[in-house]
Image 1 (tube, rainbow, N blue to C red):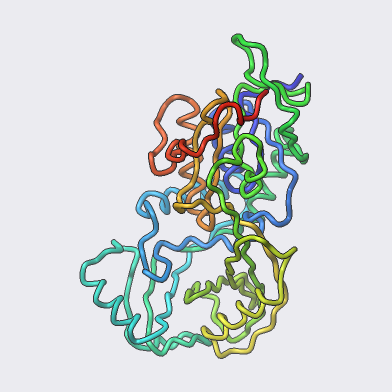
Image 2: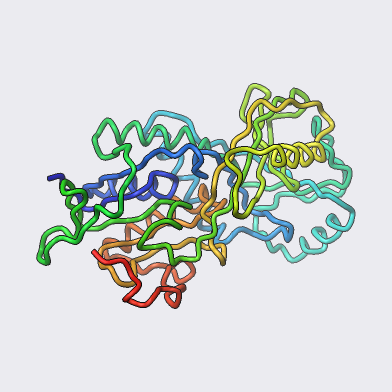
Length: 366
């Protein structure tokens, strides 16, 4: 029988950062992950963007989450001996004179702290960039090589024996006899004190958490070659353009609600090519296209916390498109809560949706 303190199901950004946090605190951790190629974490461009959206709003808790994430990824680079995070300025391109005027008017109130470095009302002359109405330079942004980071953590986990490349079968999880020992036994071979679901969008099929308001949405990205664009900055206007090196860029992302097509689509490619064409007049060639499914939540805030009826069973996820920024700090928060050292923030506690929990007669039983 394998004994662990925490059994974590899923090794996307939510599961990987939580497992890493728990391991560094000295806990015995076992992770199950099937390595789905269409998970959001394995497709994302990893953008850290402090100010985004049509309203040009400051990201939620940006002052706390972005510095924490940056420090975490730098420390992880030092531990693993690989580079994952690139700090880069972001140029938000104004799409019209009206947008320009609105942002200039808002800037007088300094609603973005020091995340907005400069607002330009003229074309900055960036190589290959179409910006006749100017734009805003953002600081403290960048991008993370998410797939490479997860692969490095997974390789370390497989070598150390705490990561198993298997599909977790919730039907094989049973409660252990009451007492001081483990709370659960999985597949007759693993004893765990606590189980944490970090399955991302797959949680909609989880028998214990399918009542949560997760609405998966599909996103597609393109990899393009574009010699005429400079690699010094990230571009943003209806789409992001993230440098990959050697004249390549990642362009994304689309948003599609269920039902989904299987894999990348012609419509997704056409949409992203149109968006890129509005940002640059330089010729480009599409060299790759991928699709992934994000775990979106109704109020756009993550979901952390215990199952309302099964002690020792918890959920951590629902990060949507903001996982790179959210995951490190929320992993620490979740680890603190699991140790009884902190309360979960009300904004992320899944208790805010407690009214959705079904009647006990409809709940799964061990």
